[in-house]
Amino acid sequence: MTVVSELTSQFGVAAACQALAVPRSSFYRSRQVPSPKVDPPSPPKPSPRELSEEEQSVVRETLNSPRFRDQAPREV
Image (cartoon, rainbow, N blue to C red; front, top):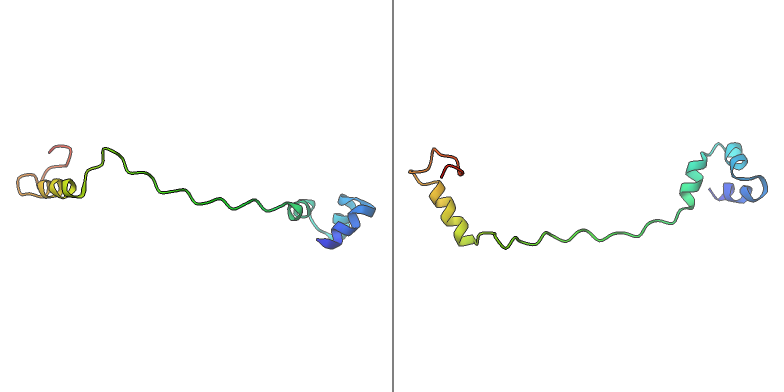
């Protein structure tokens, strides 16, 4: 791309790219400054309505008990 850059001052971008068989879009893309890297998003905050570990285990035990084994969680 440096050769194309040198020729653009004398012949223009279109003529220089055509002479060297370089697409103009590639020439312009090579001149762009890379965008700064964005930090990855932070993990989502826990819901204030979330059950504690103890409560979750109690719910699991209840749902898996023989009494409710054949029912969907919404039915229980």
